[in-house]
Length: 210
Image (cartoon, rainbow, N blue to C red):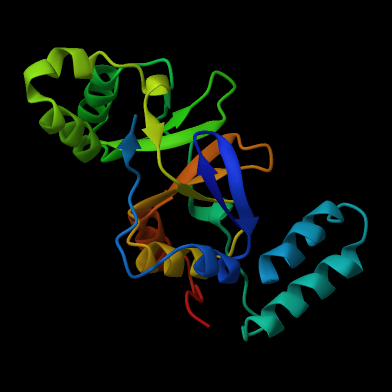
């Protein structure tokens, strides 16, 4: 299950197929600053502790829909994502973001509220673009609070989502990473290209493509 967030508000929540209907894959998707089948597994999880026979039936049904060998294990985002990922609160400044990116040698950082709810995603390129737009006031720009900036649509994913679906979305929308959030919009991790490559390398018999 995927969602699209805009400054902390959900504007879309559905399967990957419906995501392609609302987002244009022809253009490079990236956050900017300005002044199906997954549903079956959601239902399956709610009943996970109640009905073992239903659990196995739901798994096999999902695999049949996805044309997957029913003898193989399905791997989800939660199995490969980076938990306790680095994030920054929205009351931080752009300079705080830059320093955190540099200190941790990461390319992008999720922005969260005081309740750890996803608000956006920021990287060095975005900071640089803001500086270039007003180079004479660079100090003022760097001291701007993230909460004073507007972030464009951000694609997120639920922990229980097929890795193959996520990999395809990342390729099609040219994303290096996708924040992982729960139903309440709370950040629980992040899944990157590196995470998926590591999964392919280390998980035996991983069925990445059906």
